[in-house]
Length: 444
Image 1 (spheres, rainbow, N blue to C red):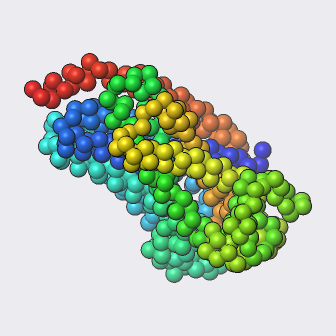
Image 2 (image 1 turned 90 degrees about the horizontal axis):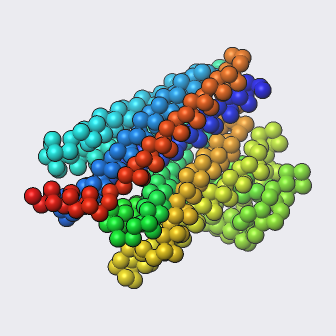
Image 3 (image 1 turned 90 degrees about the vertical axis):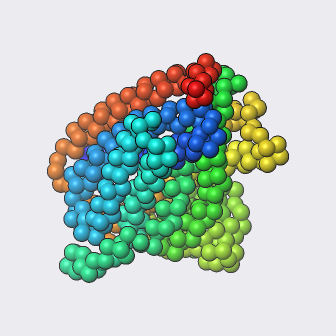
C-alpha cells in the first residue's frame, strides 16, 4: 500500500467518523436549550427531564468527538506535513479560533451538566445557549479552513512560500459562506431527524408517553425546518461552485460536454471512456438554471479541462446523487409534518408518519458523509485547489499501514462504546411513573 493511499484512507476514516459527532455537537445542544426554554416558559416538568436526558447524550458524544477531533489535529501534521507547512501560516488563525470555541463549549457544557438547581434557572439556560452557539461557531470555523482549501485566498506564493498573508481574507474565502450555511443546516437537519426517528420508534411502543411526544416535536422543528431550507442553501452553493470550481460542478453533474442549456441529471452512471452519463433522467436546461439562474448559460464540461486535473467523476457524481436523494426524502417527511401541523395544529403521530420518520432518520448522516465525499474527492488531485497537489502534501515516512490499522481499531472501539452508551440511554427513557414523580416534585 502506498503512502498516499494509506494516508487518504486514514484521513477519510477519521473525517467520516468525526463528522458525525461534529454534526450532533452542533445541533443537539440547540434542542437541549429549546427544551429547557419550554420548561421555563410552561413549567411542564417533562421538558426539564428531556433537557437533562439530551444533555447526557450531548456529553457522551462531546467526549468522543473531542477524542476523534484531537486525533485529526495530530493526523494533519503527521500525514500531511507539506500541507501544514504551506497552510499553517495562512489558516492557523482559523484553527486557533476553533480551539477557543471548542473550549468555550466544553466549559459551559460542564456548567450546564452540574448546574441544575445550583445556579439560577435563567443562568443555567444561558449556559446551555452558549453551548449551542459555541458548538455552531466551532463548526463554522472549521469550515472556513475547508472553504479556503477549495477557494484559497489571503496570500501570495513566492518560491513556494506564502507571503503577504491576510488571515481575515483567508477566513472569508469565496466558498466560506456557502459551505458554512450548507453544512450547518445539514447538521441541524441530520441530527434533528435522527433524534425524531429514535423517538418515533419509541413512541410506537408507548403511544401515550408525553416524553417522546415532546421530544419528537422539538426534533421535528429543528430538523424539519433545516431540511426545508437546505435546498435553498444547496442552490446558493451550486452558484459558488460554478464560479469557483467549475470542474467540480461538472463532475458532480456528470457533465462531460461544454454546452448551453445544460441538463440537470437525476441518477445516471458516468462513463469517462465514452464521455457520457448513461441512464440519467435529464431535465433540459436544469443545470444552467441551477448554476447561473439562466437557462441559456454555458456550463463547462469535463472535456474543457486536462485529463490529469479531473476528479474521479464516477465517485463524485454518485456521492452527489446520494446526498440529494437523502435530502429530498428528508424534506418530504418534514413537509408532511409541517402540512399536518398547519391543518390540524397537532403533531402528526399516526403510525404511517412515525414509520416514515423512523425510515428517514439515518439519511441525514448518510447525506453528510456523501456531501463531504463530494467536497473532498471533487477537489482532487488538489489538496489546495490549484496551489498544492495531494501527492506533494503527503508524508514520506514509511509504514503508514500500521498507523491505519491502529486508528481503525481505535475508532471501532470508540464506536462500540458510543453505541452501548446510547442504547442504555434509550432503554432508560422515562416511564409514566417517572414523569409523574417529576411533576409532583416540581409542584411541591
